[in-house]
Length: 311
Ligand SMILES: [Zn+2]
Image (cartoon, rainbow, N blue to C red; front, side, top):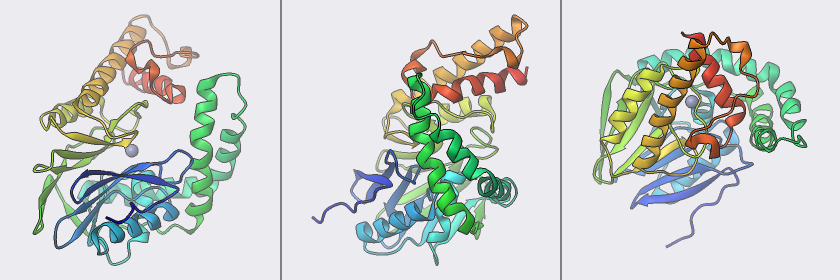
């Protein structure tokens, strides 16, 4: 057996024979996790990283692991860290829901323009936090300095590829070795999030419907829809659940995220009852099990602020 392909952007983890997770490597430019699936006669990739540099390694890994280039690339949702690398898969058919395609073409395009315009300033801001007294802020700097370095290097050259094949709720891909399903779970983390289910392997690629060991980002989606989506994901237990961010998890991680979102809603409702405003949240930190997760700063407070703003 040949050695696993190496990348400075991600670590490859074998989940089943012919199924690999590409997990963002700290300091690398993948940011979003991805997946590679050997369907037998064709190869499928799930999500595309945030930079062309990481996606080039992902495309090469798919060839090294399966012996052929990916014929299809499924994009779970429109966020930059899951779609930008798609341009490094020439000749690969891009697949997403029609809603996600629209979102890439609108908000995704705006996000690219913003990354190009503000990337340098954001990089300087993150780098300046590297020596902060607060370890949470140093952790933010350690993650977001390479994040913005990657965007400063890649975004000005990025061409946003739009999916050529769209579906609404569910798409089944049949290979000679396995059949997989791409399922939209509707508005949750974003206005539309799809997952990749490998029923015979006990593997679900969840993208950003699951965060493991780090705080989620709620402010672009529908928290109640997200809770419903997590209930659907939990029905696939026992399985390996590959998150969009963090290491490969289990059903416990799906449950922990659902509990955390409910706790966030309760915290926001309590603050609302006290008449607190979004400006009163300075220094607010989690007290539930998520206090051990990374990126409490800045995401915990911004998630509470988002929920409070909707009340
Ligand atoms: Zn996302």
